[in-house]
Length: 401
Image (tube, rainbow, N blue to C red):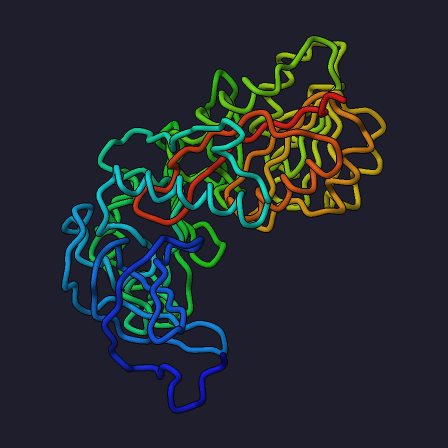
């Protein structure tokens, strides 16, 4: 039954609620007089006073202003900006509980969107934690906003206001954020900092290099990459090695295979695949980002059995006539039905999907299963501690008749 205007929640209103399950996006679900509220800084099982921050015809958003009954998973945030800065979602939750909640999100998204009950199907996985085990100082790529005062910071959650900071506890310590804080910046600038696995540090202001190399050297699993600091690269310092190992373990490349690497970036996965297909195999990369394409062309310049297609995957994939294996690592929006249909036409013996959004993965898993490919593996990694995000690696094989 639709509530009349007098009964609807209003921005600024404070109400008392019981906190329910976690939802995709890092919020927890609560209800007040039948209205759904997505609550930040909450934990399942708590009773809290929350302040309504936004309302639409279907849901409301709110922030916790007072915890009345405290969950055992609640901890004191290590960072004093937790709750105001929009960068971290979960600093108030113990790391072990963060892993539990992220697993719940994956299970719920697969069940609701993908119509796949992972537990019933036998996928009793856990979300794997990586070093550092305190969840701090892991991020090697940072994009800072600049306040009207010329100080770096981050936009607040659901806000255009820049929260000035003195330090960032999830940033790699080699960035020396405190030194960046001490500088005055143009208020309309963005400050982008990247640290490579070889400890090179690049600082850019609104896309222009102001210190450090204009090309970074990244080393992963014996492969070396010279890439632009603004090219996409996994931000967790241990993510590249972890994901290459996990994806290749599922792909099971054979000598002579023809392998398609979709949304290939600079070629993180393709470099290792190339070692395994040998001289008789072929690796095809498809990527739309011009910077990543330029870097990939340099990385694979000496390899005649590497094909690189610049453009959108759904427009370039029809150029591929053979793919024994397909690996894809799409953006948060996922691959989508059009790309899935083109992949299926190539009849690969295995598809490995690296996903940074479980909702998009669940949707695409549904498309794949409807097209005759069965989910046969899924694992998850906490590559974004203190935030709502996670990374999954899923494997699909042709379903047996």
